[in-house]
Image (tube, rainbow over all chains, first blue to last red; front, side, top):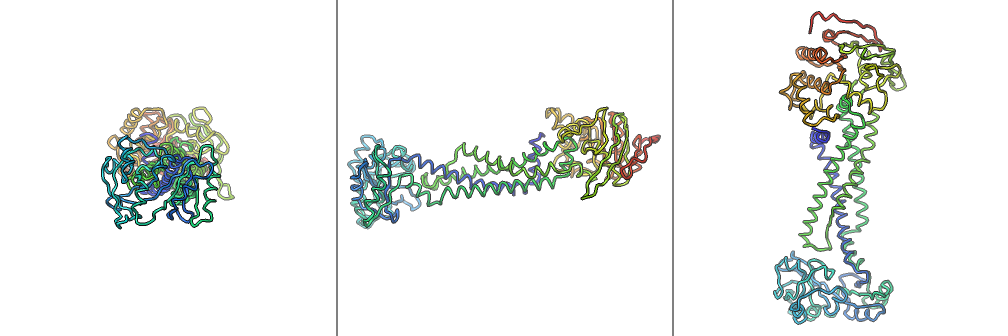
Length: 387
Length: 232
């Protein structure tokens, strides 16, 4: 046995007490870790953002459509390089729970606003010539084992066809890497023309427009100018930078920074309260034992170190469990959402180190008051009282 | 003289009152001497023992051990001094309940630079010396009172201190176990040159000592050598 063995044996002597201390700290850190993970995913979204891109939606609601005449008018504004538009398709494959993102894109302009994707000559030909052709990400192709030329059926929850059937048949026209187009890892691009010609209603509309401002253009001015054009129309617009547009999705999960602060405050309180009370209780319960250790030559400083080591072992155990749980949750969400960027928890080694350091710091701070209590305890007096 | 106690006084505060525990006590104990410290409850026996053991410090007077004034510095220095020079044995609850006999005895050695194997060998030898070589992995709850006390003695001597301070070591034991413990203490004095100070209420137990000292109301009242004609 060595001193660390002594610490571990002490933790194991009252498993229920140790578990009841570890669990709340673990739960608090799971919350903290998950919030950090969501924050990371959000940062990832922002990394994808191009500062020169503006997204225009219907001011009333993101689900209200805009007219297809809008991009042409935006393009006339000074400083605008290109404008494209997208419509949500809102479909699933075979089963309603087999979902992924489908965007109907305006194919002549989309890849001028976003980076172009690399296609083989055969894929490019297919994409240009076949009205039903769709482009899919390599991850989606792997998921469904789809290959170029395959016929796939997607059921739209928004758009029925003119024949009232909402099952749409497409041809896989090309497979690309999502990084190339700054898009969701599980995305399908449908030709907007094809959607428009065949949908029962909503022709001539779009879900949102994306404007690429010229490098020399003033993004803020273009942003104001777009909304000014449509301010008095039947469909007033709301234009924001792409990062803000993505953030609006995140906001559906709640105000992240407020939740982060709230969870951090709870974690700090829980860890401080539990470490303080656990250590104080331990010192009271183990007075006799501490007195005997003092008699055999353990200084109060050493006894304090042993007690702090016990607290830190509890906190470390709780943090480790929390990190494992959060990692499991991240994996589960990834599988559940098929890697969607809209709901994601991303943890990295640096966060794990930061969270561990924060836990160590909190555990140490929480130990201060009981340790002062230990240093003021008359250990010899405890021996006397017992004899 | 190995232990010299010179005009030592100790007072405790109880609320606004100052309570006298020891008053102007002077006493010499020779090396390898076995001294029984007797007296009624509250007479200052344990206080004197704690002062000699460096668990407490006197308000006035001085204590010299081996010709050197005892360290009255920081808690850390006094603890270091205790680890090297003193072995404590108490009346009850001597052992740490969740550790085995072997681990309990090993505790003082964790403060030394000995390797794990060296510690293990030393612990085993000491437990065999006290007759518990076959109880290494027993927890205190699996030992009798006498066995527990012998483990405590093993722990007290494992780091080979010169002085053993025993506070009522037989107070909680039946006659047979008490006799075994006293015989063991006597053996430690005879064969291992330990200087032993034993606090006891029990006149029978005190007979094992070379000398008996009585305290009353914090003052030394009797100090006499004992005739040990009948060995324990």
